[in-house]
Amino acid sequence: MGFSNLIEDQQGNIWIATNAKGLIMLDQNAGTTTTFTLDSGLPDMTVNSLNEKNGTIYAGTGLGLAVITPIKASPGKSKQTTSWQVKTYGKAQGFTRRP
Image: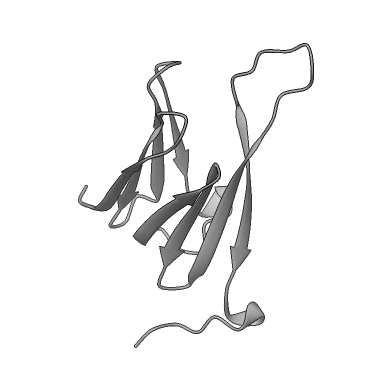
């Protein structure tokens, strides 16, 4: 598995953009790994670029952009984020496939 980009977010999570295996997030604090794939909402399994701003991850692929936002735990529960919302922007939203 090759990777195309690697970033660390504000929470200390390591995000790995791969060349065919989707997007991998390593939560160093919890010691867990989360893999984002087509089933998770990625538009493509090859992630070409990664950026993070204010806790939101922007993953660029050849078929569009995935915006990955943490879903905060309910008050009184653990502060650890355990789930993510993935929104995809592609051809229907004006993104075109690169040649």
